[in-house]
Length: 199
Image (cartoon, rainbow, N blue to C red):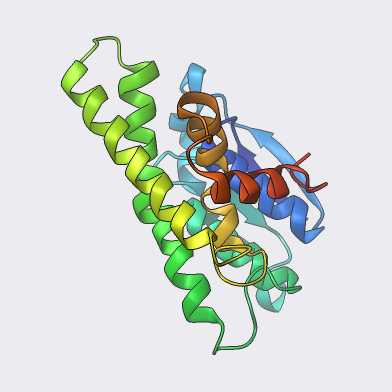
């Protein structure tokens, strides 16, 4: 059984989307960020960086319990545990998945979160920062759109590379900027949105 420590954020949805796609048995353990539950001493034993998502898998490799935090690490672990293609077994296919997976977790998501902070959450309006991150986010969406002009998904078949970016494209691309100028990205987004695991 896997316990998924979750809240309704972009990174939280990545982990939930991935675990739904794998079909692994899991239970949601809500971590209410509004109530600062991420600083609870018991949760800090699971996620020392006080962030969600995190998982505890009581049936890890060799039957050992695995405790894991960081959305990218969680996605990769779940995909490898389940098999089935979200992270390819073939080492010749992994580099393509890895580059878009790391781009999603290490470049796109942090910058999209800055866009979200200055657009929605900052108590002080900072027009220069808002304009900066608006431009950054549009550039990132353009990068995706150009790549997806010749690719159905980021790295061949649907994978954790797609899952790593989908929630922020959905939240900020669709919700804030719109995807009208990014038709290839919109096609990709809509195909993922229609998947049963995402629903």
